[in-house]
Image 1 (cartoon, rainbow, N blue to C red):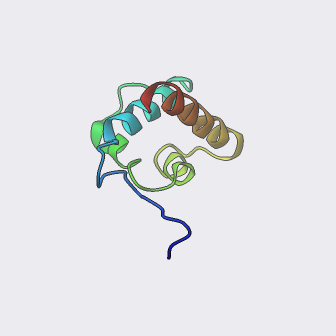
Image 2: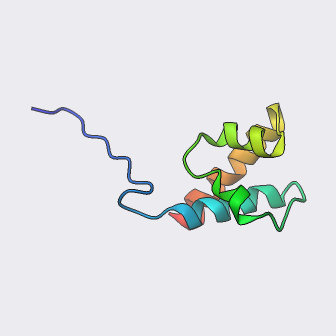
Length: 80
């Protein structure tokens, strides 16, 4: 008998790519960053957000925390 069951739906059962990309765009806009190439934004699908903001935009520390917070705020509010 199983006690817990976990599902990883992103990309398997649901297509969350558009919601992820639009949430990244929302977070970046607060830093004055807009009109980013879709291929660059698609790199956020899958890896941890902190890693992606650091790797793709060089965010560190508080800026990375802020970007992830903005992403989570809008994703939970409007994209779920």
